[in-house]
Length: 133
Image (tube, rainbow, N blue to C red):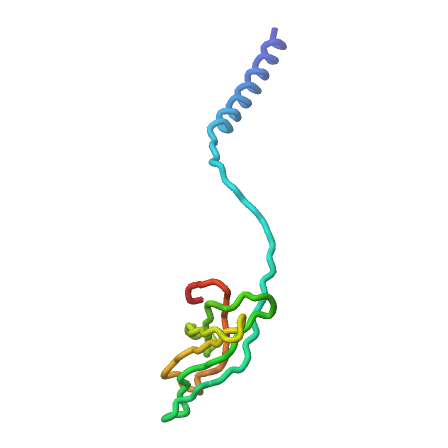
């Protein structure tokens, strides 16, 4: 008799555990979603013909920096260009004018930038409109 009772208790215990697990699993709902993966080449740009336009009255002030920027490969012209003239400094947006496409001419205007403060020339460019970096 104890043998049958022991078997019955073990069977009830297993059923209770299985039922509890099913109850938790059955209560989950997950909405439909999608995911994907892909690859694409990210090309760069070549900056050339850099000119530091100094103020006529005070040549220690940089009025603007101009340069030409062209894609290393392909035809994706730059449509957003920013420069940084001090390490960890602010980014300045540049005005773009089409040159010999896909090259564009960039003019980055400062007005009161001291020449001695120009310690780097970092250029960020992309082929889609984007906010300031």
